[in-house]
Image 1 (cartoon, rainbow, N blue to C red):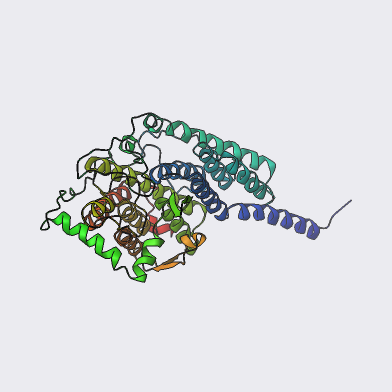
Image 2: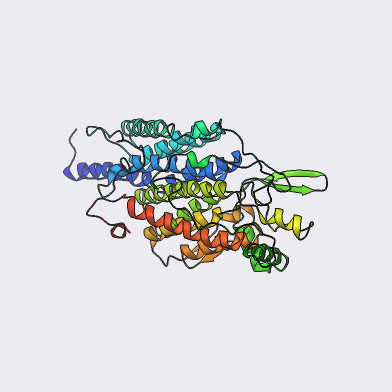
Length: 447
């Protein structure tokens, strides 16, 4: 049977369109955003502490980034930049891939090894892989991509096992001291100190946990003329006189992964997103608002996650170095036995404010990616029944996140101010040293 040239041309065009359709559909960054959000949801369900969540975000998003970048020569590998990270496996030049699928597979494969609810990851993975298949992706490309994603994931998993995390699981629990100035467990759960050995975790970009030591906290003193006493009174009064706006701000940035609620004789817990998870979601919102493609979104998650991880390591080093007592403990003992903070006091030392450190660091990194005056609406907390809030910039959001801890009655102002400075220094250091673009390409060029 003979076909006219016109008919053959039509068939050829249809085949080309079909090929382009699966390539276009599989490059949708929503595949990436949904995978990262799934990992957030699993960590919320599994009640991950903020430092542990930050470690998980770093490894999964580095894996996703490294698998995704091979379609674009403008991006550079993190190998040789992050401490202990060696060269990654490379795709076979004779094979065809969908690197977006490889990235999603890498994220979920690494993520599964770092959470308790493995079944939830498996269920989501089965669903999203089927969606990739439904784009019309050829079986050969599908299988090649899964294989490459697995190779990247195994490289990251092996690297993660050398960061001292496993060793810190068997170190001694924190010993509460009897002196007046040191941290004590607080109501209502009087929970033990969270991650007292986190400063032993290998850093990603910063030189060490103690590289960015903040100004020391004010010495403990209940002398009415002392700076410490005045800071305590400031916390006491701000909670007693809190405006509706201050209360709203405190609740919006609470980000307590395990809040204990008391109703009569019944105590129950509610789960919320971690502080790092909140900034991960802000990153997603920024990517979507600027229509960032798959690779650029993967880059944003990786840079932000690395910054979060290092910021938590640095902050936690200071927390267990200074061991500063929380306002709730001081106020209940010396000023008002019945006083309670607006927010539940977290179970670790006060200085410096973790929200302040990680928010300032995150703002620096995101401003480098999306601009200093990037206005956005933060809807992160809507799933926890809180209305969205609008911000003029990432720094604006960071400043509000920091002051929220003062309004909530769980931090002194010096902890917030010095925490912001500490986080800003960490963010600047990482932004200057972490290179995700080729030498002849700048971040601004690909916006």
